[in-house]
Image (cartoon, rainbow, N blue to C red):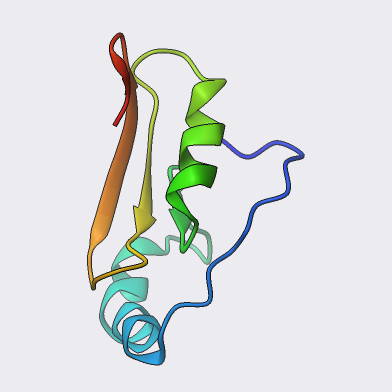
Length: 81
């Protein structure tokens, strides 16, 4: 998903980072690597920029910058969600 674009990585609050490391990281990482669709703590704007150049149906998962949650972003005929 990522090409040579500069992304603004978010510095999540300690509670969200701790939640991710303690409870989610072991479930997501496979053989020491993240899946290519998982981009971690990135902004909505960066997610939209990445998907804008992709084909319909492409998606990515990122971590919310406002809550302890995952966000699914995807490209459809009607736009980016």
